[in-house]
Image (cartoon, rainbow, N blue to C red; front, side):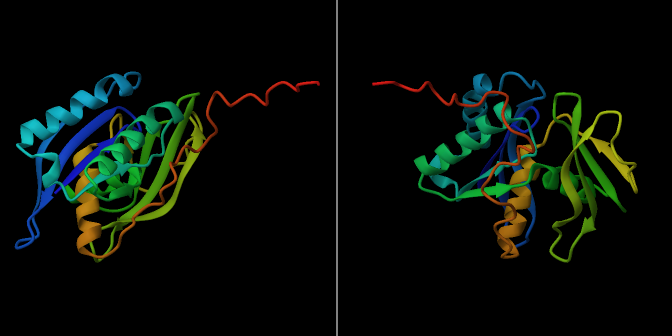
Length: 211
């Protein structure tokens, strides 16, 4: 059973489980918003709400899955920090998942077929873009290219369906992590966030002190 968190676009938190006997995936609770400005304000309440709605105590979780982006620096780091902190607090592993992979997996799981292009808002008049070619034998998404940045008026033409997503469903992040664990394919993503660009603010070099 996993707590899943994603703040690469809006904010989404879910509790998911995989039945070991049947292999069925279940979303026990999910909450979220597509507001891209209030990640830090809502993340704590969303975590408590998801756990309460699922009737799950933190100690019952086997891990915490976190969406690693792509996404803007400020919002994305809130979810990743919260997921890392929660995992550390309950002494369970943190499982990184590429957020676009979760969107693609959810689309294919719901019956989508053929090439898919996932597009999310990266701010500054740019989109984050990833291309997929279906699911593999373990039902994990096959990423053909990306993620990469593209200007809003210059996104490469999709080979198949273009899917613009305003929020990454945390249930998909968690379910994809559960599938990868069952297939012994972890980690699905690196532990470094997929920011795609540097943060707006960087530390000052400081002033030279003369003695």
